[in-house]
Image (tube, rainbow, N blue to C red):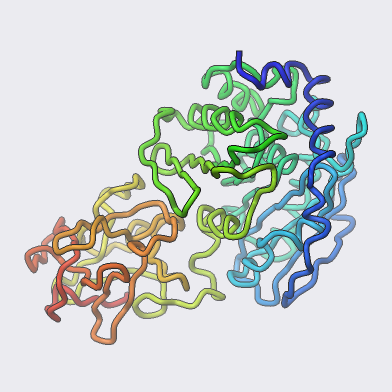
Length: 443
């Protein structure tokens, strides 16, 4: 029997045992964090629409907003406050940089000594259109999309503890609204409902999500889940339960397609072509996100690419097709594939999404919003591929005045193999020699 079954076997035991412990933890970190300097101010919005959960809405709009901005819902933990989560996390400073808008809902549910928890247990909260907190949060999102001409294809959710639980809840009940989520120290959707938290197969976890919105056949949100191995409030085993749930929803194997360490103490597992990611933080307790983690979530969402507040580092204006001078053909992802490790090629320019590259201020060159141009090595002949963006030096590039593009890590040039010009010619790293097969223009 898994530990979570003993702790959270029923709805009553689950709510009392889980959130009462949360209240006793050091969640005050989000209340006592030093105020951050910003170019804008957090404001409260009233009369934002249907509000069956009785939530308060706080909004952060950066001084410079991108055209058609993305929208991020960021949710605090139990015993927390929206203004504290705003001050104690890096989402607003990232919004300053990239021009997206952040909604900070304020929860108000209390029971058995618990306070300010998001509803993830009632029948209303667990189904599409049911009511309670999820409907209120969707109303907030709709308000921002309409008021600020936001992009409905770039709406995301994140949160800590109770906010992480609500993140998974929103992804399950409103997959038509939220395109991806990043729960920090949470539990799977439905865990605090009548089904409980314990001993479920991936299929059973997945069925809970599918039953949250019967008849829904559209795309499912991507998920990046985080958990510390020393979390004494929510067991680290919850991370695998989240993985089991969302890989099943996406029809993926529970075996990762890749495993790496973006930085010391972090282990990242990627499932499928990046639909699900799981971050294990060695030694971390119930205190996420820590500094630097929010930036990874923003990259996963694609909120850091292509906004006017991003300084271009790629050819030309920083977004568009990359055309070979020697071939007249474009840098292309074969068959519009999205899988990590797909090698790029030359192909007739067609203006489609698999040829639309966006340069970011971090030195990345992105396609599809969340896949980076990636060097599979550092020597001559190293393959050039797409890979989920994670901030490594092998995903950073310099554009030179002569039109060459060099890898930051290797110092070698982006090169059409064998000075080829035909459709299907592979791209590699190679010592820079100034040839036409190593020079590129933006179209």
